[in-house]
Length: 256
Ligand code: 48F
Image (cartoon, rainbow, N blue to C red; front, side, top):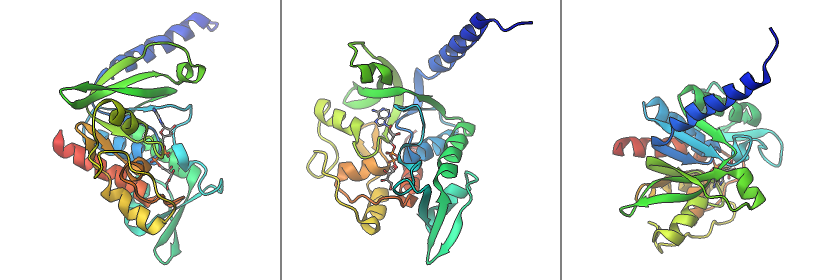
C-alpha cells in the first residue's frame, strides 16, 4: 500500500490539536526551554502536576548548547551534579569541587528526561503576554514565533495556569511585560534591576536565592532571576541554573 500524503497531513494536524487542547488549562506553564525551565518543568511534572513549556526557538535548550564560547562543555559544582546524573548525564570529576559534562549530552538529556517525566513541550511558540485575573498571573498569552518574527498583526491565543514561570533567561521577558502592564515586582524597587557583570562566585549563589515568586502567580528561575533582582551573571557554570529550577519546582509544589 502506498503512502497517502493526506493521511500524513491529517495525522499531524489531529495529534497536534489533541495535545494542544490538552494544555489549555494546566497546573504550571513555563516560558523558555533553557536548563532552568526544563529542570523546573521536569520536577513539577514527575510530582504529578500538569506542566506545559513554550519555547520560542525551533531547538529546546537555550544557552546550554554552546557550553563556553562554543566549546561544548559545561561546568557544575558538587552540590548540583546530582541533577545532571538524575537525567543520566555523564559527569567527570575535574578535582577541587569542579565537575564537567558534555553540553550537547547535557541539554539533549535534560530535554528528554523532562519529556519522559510528562512535560508537554511546544517549540516555535512565544509567550507574548500574561493573563491577569484578580491581580494574579493566571496564564500565558501565546503566539507562533513565526508571526512574531514576521511582524504580522495576528491576535494571540491564551492558556490558563495556576502558576507561571519566567525562564526566559537574560532578557526576563515575562517580568518585563508584567512590570509594564500589571504592577510592581517583589524586587526592592518594584522595578527590574539591572543584571550585573560576571562573577560566578556571587552569581551562582544569588540565582538560587533569587528564585522566588516575583509577582502573584509568577515565579522566576535561572538567569532571569538574577536579571530581575540585579545579580551577577556567571557564564558557563550551570549548577545554579539547575538548583534554581529545582527550587522553583519545590516552591510551587508547596502552593499547589
Ligand atoms: O537563556 P536560557 O538558557 O536561560 P536559563 O535556563 O539558562 C541561562 C544559561 O543558558 C546561561 C547562563 C548560565 O550560566 O547564564 O545564559 O536561565 O534559556 C531561555 C530560553 O527561553 C526562550 C529562549 O529562546 C531560550 O531558549 N525564550 C525567551 N523568551 C521567550 C522564550 C518567550 N517570550 N517565549 C518563549 N520562549
